[in-house]
Length: 306
Image (cartoon, rainbow, N blue to C red; front, side, top):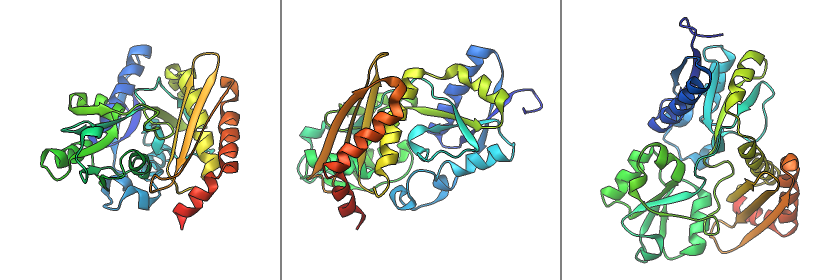
């Protein structure tokens, strides 16, 4: 089950952000349990390909190599950014822990605030969701698809190639680069991707010992919130290539979920909210998706997929 030293083996992508996030999770387990955890670097297809993530189907490209290592018993568990995980559950694996979520919001890194960027300014992002929602706010800017790690993306601003880039606040915080943020977008301006800011701790479903060990870091409120967000995404994804944003908050008694589907040009959107019991999180997500489809979200999705 473990390395020769008796440490649990945590599989992680090799990028700086991934190893930083995995290191934080490892440290938290050591602090809570006293059990040693060692990081095992894994190179994934998403890390080596030059294609844009939207063309690759986005989710899954960083996940499958880590899951292969779990199946081959080369690692005991893996840490993913939750928004990279496909919403369809693979029965061979279990989400043993969803630690308390970090900042869910998107951040602008640049020389100005978003409203102060000059018309025609170039804003870099690899996310169709961000392009669509930002286009709704500022159709006069040029949105440039970019890839690469935070360093590479911020470097394009520092070199003058781009005027700004949009990244997840949580990632910048974890990398200690929050001082470079010029603006954080609130949820009413830019709804985050489902699961954004949350980490997923995954292991094989048949490893009851590991599941039990990992469970100590699970945060119930984070779990109910992201369960609702991901259930909504799964229900919309039937034909959805369109940008989807979703964010839920569990206050301990009520789960509030807000979601939006936006046309790729940002001109049209269907935005809805719902509230329910945290114990009914998945159902809440599915019901809200059905309401959004009834209000035309599927038309926006259809336009985008053609």
